[in-house]
Image (cartoon, rainbow, N blue to C red; front, side):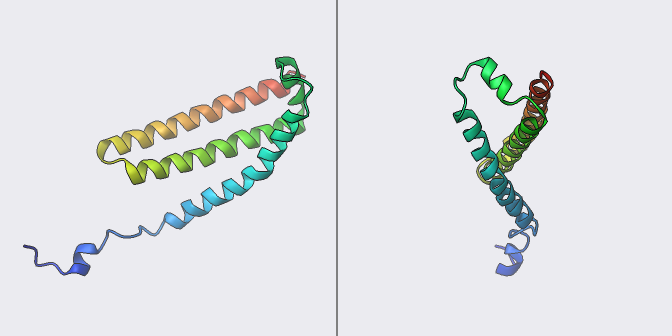
Amino acid sequence: MSLRTPLGRAAGLGSAGRGSGHWWAQRVSAVALIPLALWFMVRVATLPTLHYEDLLHCFQGLGDGTLLAAFVLALLYHSELGVRVVLEDYVGGGLRVAGLILSKLAHIALGLLGLLAVVRIAASA
């Protein structure tokens, strides 16, 4: 039997006071993805074919390369935020920590690989 009051037992179990920043980041990245995804879909839909050469030619140049890099980075940032929430909310113990570390490393690696691919595409002009 505990002599602590209900308020004393609940203290420290509520909001950590930093969830609103994460919430806003997720919303802002989602809003940023709307025009970028629309641009990407229109750009790909207007291609005559989806052959490698057509795709390569489509994203060459500074303008399209910059938009493609922004799309890749915004998509990976938004994905990392979402995966982090799922791991924090539904996975417990040491598996949570391992999952958070692996998720962060995977998203960083994918971001670097995505940027490298965009640079190679844009520079192949």
